Image 1 (tube, rainbow, N blue to C red):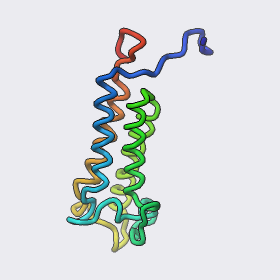
Image 2: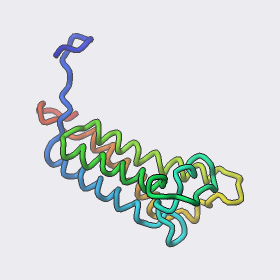
Image 3: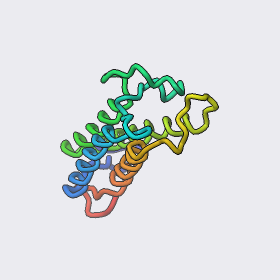
Image 4: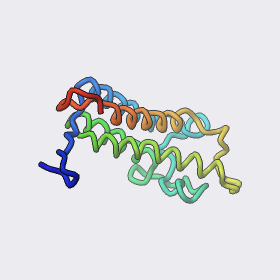
Amino acid sequence: MPCPGGGRWQSEHMSAFARAVAALIGLALIACAFLPWVGGSITAFDLHIRSLFRIGEAEGATLGTSIGTAVVVAGLLIVFGAILNARMAVIVGALLAVAVPAVWIFGNAVSSSPVAVPIARVQIGAFATAVGGFMALILAAVARDTSTPTLR
């Protein structure tokens, strides 16, 4: 199918190795939701999604309204994108995996609220989620397209 510029549409297929690595990164992101995000025992499932924009309102999280659910959805998008060979699903999942902890960490870091989480109390789960999402983005950007012999 021709594109407006006169060339051809690019295929969005990833190599089998890139898909396997993306699936592993997606599974690791899902595991990050169960790691501590604050202190020693507060996971992403204990933090309400509204705490991304209203600092200090982290209580009352349910399975459907927690940051952990957003992280799991991001990981599942990456896993399913890898399984179905859909680079765009990997990219969307990776962007979500970077955005959620980045907004939460930055919002707490710059807040003057007395209930904001100090950056020193943010634990490995939040940072690992952001790093995993970034790794998935880089992988999606440089993965070899199986329909062409060159790098993407």
